[in-house]
Structure formats: structure tokens, C-alpha cells
Length: 196
Image (cartoon, rainbow, N blue to C red; front, top):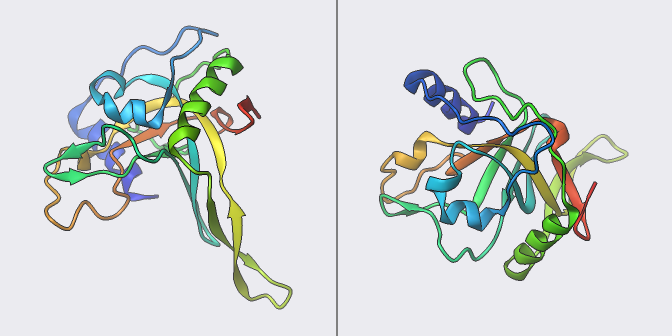
């Protein structure tokens, strides 16, 4: 399990945080971009929202981690002089003591999602990432894979590193200010603004 997930467990257990109310059945959640979340952390932390951004993947032969990101945010998140990347890690596997993802399946408004995706596209290029694969000789090779736009409905949770003074070298490890805890079916890719 990645460090961010361990930090979320530690925060939830040690502080006994009570997390907000779940969305009502089929109620439409607020749809926001990564930059909007990071620019107004006091509003969005510990809430259930839908976030639109570029899906980032860190893939190895044994594990895969995903995050949502957006480039050139107008108000980057800075704590103790450290500027965090404009990235929110996605957690779809959780353990006892961690915040749970929302229990509902909200109605989705494709027009609102498309409008938010349009905002993200103005500041962010889709780009590519690499993934390891086995070739015909059984050797590992790196393959270039296009990134995707994505939409994640879940609970936003601050990581403990957000309140630490990481010093001049930065926060290391995951270096993310927030995680979004979601059910796997609520992590969806977007094609032309439509939810898949």
C-alpha cells in the first residue's frame, strides 16, 4: 500500500475525524476540477465530490497507482513554503480505519462534466506515460501509452504531509496534498466529455 493510504489510515485512527454526510441517493454531486479543489481546500476537504482531471498512472509489473492532475493551476497549494503538485491520488482499496467512499451512485450530468473537462483542457495537455510489458522473449520493455481524461466521484481527504514542514527537499514519497477515496466503478475515463 502506498504511503498516502497509510497516512490516511493514521489520520483517521489517531484523530477520530468524523467525516461529513453522504450524498442523498441519486443526488447530483458537485463537479469540480483538480485546480478548483486545490484552490479552495477548506471548502472541499472531507467532502464527497466529483473531480475531473487528467488520469495519471504509475505502473509497474506488480502494482498500479492512479491520480488526477491538472497543469497551471492559478492558486497552487503551498504549505510551509512547499508547493505541492497539482495532483490528487486515487484510492479504490481501503482498510479498516480509513474513510469510506460515498455509498451512493449519483446521477451524472454529462453537460456539466463536459464543461469542466473543457476548463481542464485549457491548461493541461493529455500527454503519455510508460508502462512495463513483457515482449515475446519474456523480457520487460517499456511501452508508451496515451493518458486519458477522467472523472472520479469520491471522498476527498487531506494527507498528513499537508500540515508537515517538509523542509527544503520537499515532502518526498507520494508528495500529494489530497487523496480521493472512491469505489472502483466511480473512477471513469472520459472520451470527448462523455463518461465511459
